Image 1: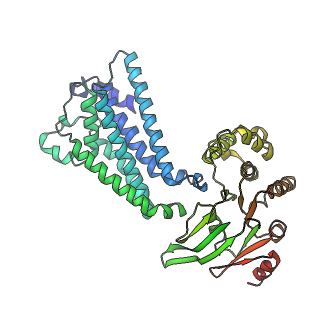
Image 2: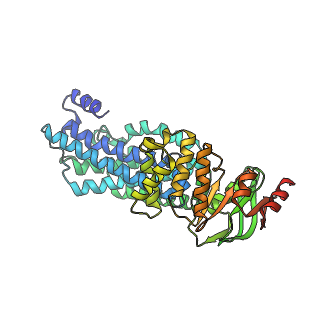
Image 3: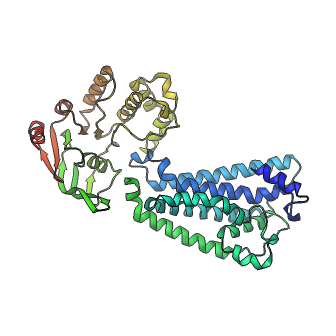
Length: 218
Length: 216
């Protein structure tokens, strides 16, 4: 999938909008989106189905499953990203984040948002099963409206406010801003993303606390 | 001593809460092996799961200072893609056992799985899995074993082995058992809890409890 995007962007002529090499551009956008957001969110959402067996031990609580899955997905991302950076370095492309600490911080924000959204989805899916399918269906369109394969600077100015509603846009743009040396996002707003994280996380843990006994009884 | 204090359990249904157990209040002494009796749907397994701490009462509390096993049921929870040995390690670690080698070898030996012990648990046949999960629980020194209809599995030789293993544990442990087979209950238990009409009655004699149970 990644190589498809890279070749598409490269074929388009000097793709990636001149901010960096196409491969680095995809690395800074698609990989966090796919591994940190999609994978973490989905794993948390389906935590209940996959780990039912483990809940047969009193030592294992549902929250442990959430925690374990979130940590594993974060680790998978770190390893994958590191390998890709090293691989690109080997090919002669410098893919290191321009501002590593800032990048890590925004990656962590995206990761936390994915985990809390996933837990919330898992809690809600216990009330109405269809929610899981709706969210799964939304992941592909989200890829296109979250500015993963194009930067927000490529969007006409009058549509910025519409795209900026989506918190994922802010996460991706902030990561890109810190990863690529030249890019400055026209809309990225960390406070907005943090507000989403705090609200989702609060709803997720509240919902979990209210419902966990009933969730594992099912 | 396991104290069941005013425990109620209901399941939400679309007709409102359906009470399975209502205001149960009894104590299970340490030196008795208890059978839980009741017709289908009377809450036997639910009570056992609540004693095992993987289900929770809607009201009331269950208090105990004993080291209670997980409920040994046919569908005991193991991670399907991990091998038998890895699952043993996992169970050891969540029970606070750091040195897992002894228990691993004990389980391998007891379950008679041989090389299959290194294969994923998901690939085991149901008989193998039953043997395996019984062996894992025998690897620990629990104070109380919760057994849900599991002694009736396996071939004759293995069943005899289970019986002797349980008998050996008797010195330090007691058993709480759910089963429909009266012969097994009579052999293994010397007290009973009869669940009927959402209530529980504690019987000091298994024969009297079985008599009541037959005449429900």
